Structures are given as C-alpha cells and as structure tokens.
Image 1 (cartoon, rainbow, N blue to C red):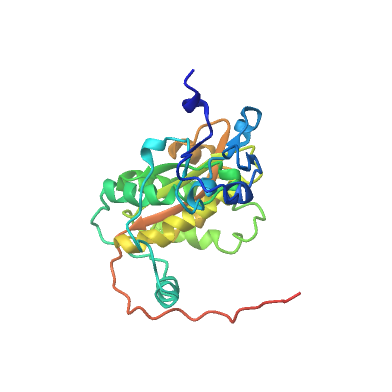
Image 2 (cartoon, rainbow, N blue to C red):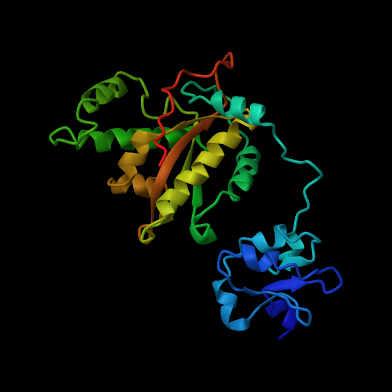
Length: 281
C-alpha cells in the first residue's frame, strides 16, 4: 500500500521548521515531535486515535503540514474572510429572534443545504460528527406532523405530565378550532436533527449543530423557531417517529426546528434579557 495514503499527516520537509507546535496542540497527543533528524509523525499504532480535528494543520506557521483526511478537499479561505468585529457579532446575535409567522413562499432546498453545509463544521465530542438530518419540506407533511403531535397530547389528558399538564387542553382545543399552534400553519418547514441513541454526548452535539443552524439561517433571510412540542412528542410517540423517518433502532431525535421566510420584518431592536449572573471563583 502507498505509504503516503497510510500516513496520518503529510509534512513538507522543505517547509517544516521543527517548531513542535503541531505536537503541542494535538488534543490526542499522538504527534511525535520533530528533532534535527526527523519530521513530526503519527506512528502507525496511534493512527486510529486521530480524531481528524485538523488543529495540527491550521496551527503550523509555515503551512508545512497537511492532515491526510480527504486532502483534495482542503479549502483555503480568502484573506480576512470571516473576520467580524466584536460589535457586529454582538449586534447580530442580540437581534436574533424566534419567528412564529411565516410567508407561504417555500425556502429553496438548495438554500437549506447551504446552511447545513455550514452547520457540518459545528463542534462535536471527539469530532464524532454524529448528527444526521431530516428535512420535512412539503407543507402537507408538516401538517401531518402537527396532527400527530396533537394525537400524542391527547394521550396525556388523563396523566400528570409536567410541564405540559396546564397547556395540553388549550392546545388541543385551539387545533380543533382550526389553529395550528404546533407548527404555526405550514409552511414553515421542519428540520429534524437525529443522533445515535446510545451516545452519552450526542444529544449535546445535536443542540450545538441546531444552534449553528439557528444563527446561520438569519444571514440567508431564513427565520427559525425551536419546535419544542414536536420534539417532546417524537421521543415517545412511535407514529410521529415513523413519520419523521427516524430509524426504528439505534437513533433518536435531538430536537426539531421550524424554518421559513419571516412574514413580518422586525426593527432590529434586541429583546430585553435578564442581567448576566456570574459567580467568580
């Protein structure tokens, strides 16, 4: 087998200064540092421990190191690309609002894919990247999901199910009177993040990924709202799980998000929030 294909990192001998930074930043501590006679290297017995995070690659001052994971897909960012001032990022995040009223114009599938392409760079535990996606794009299918969520709520009427106990009768009544209080009159579309069922950290990875979508979507003119009722229902109501296409074994729903084009423009005023509470130790 080609030795280069087997190597975890590829190092340009002419560019490498043997500074040791790649070894220092490796979170798995698997890069043997260089000396005057050798280059940095990941020994074969340690190769399987590499999590492909790429810290070694991006911190190499002379750009002498390449992580040997799909190296042909390496993307160079233009100079200063992505640089955002502290003031701008502050206002961008402060102005974020949940959208509960949407136009009838669908969001193009390619736009949703563009945002999801950004979201795949969200952090995950050990860079496991466990999140997979289902997009419910057809308004009729979204309506079906809302109806199944109401069916689940009806199963709760004779039970004590905090924190929903006080809300369920009113939500059911509103639905039966023609008001979609679950998915806000489809469209919007639904974005479902599903994760490995047995992983103790994948649920957090799913929320992180959805938060990245929530933040990035606004730049595309897409409004979002976290669909809490659907998310609660899918965890225990098998008909809804089947409708959302979550595999029957091995995976579960992290959370569901509504998305669509906002019906109303906002002034940009940040909402009021409670003061920050910090304990310094």
